[in-house]
Length: 161
Image 1 (spheres, rainbow, N blue to C red):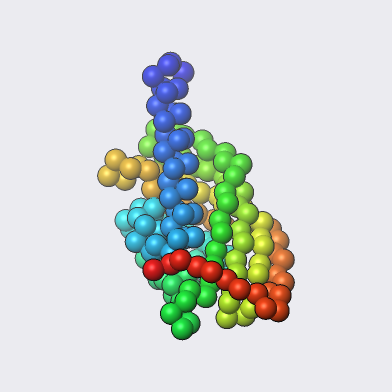
Image 2: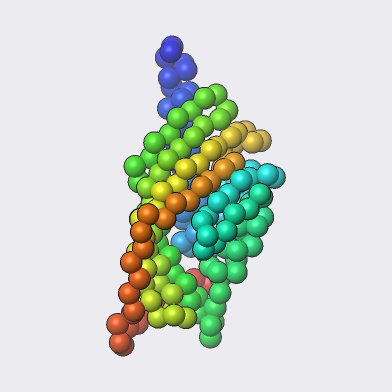
């Protein structure tokens, strides 16, 4: 592989990492438009497991995101998420790529008064659409989850507008 091809591959890997990070930040910051923009326009194949479901287009998962992530009670967000993706393993082949990620996921659910911590694996496929890398397929496998009740007298401060 010549120098130009190697540099192009490295640039693609960095753009894909940035895409995944935008996706995760959109989840945590409750930004549904930014979340949806991470996927191809039509036909994304998404499997988020039995709890959330499978979709043959990103509009379906974006609707679920809006319903769960934006839920409010007394004006306050009631599901708080923290996504930390690591161990990226990305393979690029021209305008297509695959990626595997490990996710450490933490969620506070104020309606159930619980906190959950999960170990999750992502298997993604990316394509270039309109000159930008986008998620075309994502399969989520939850390896394990630990859910505990929130302690008596807990307090949550959030700054979502």
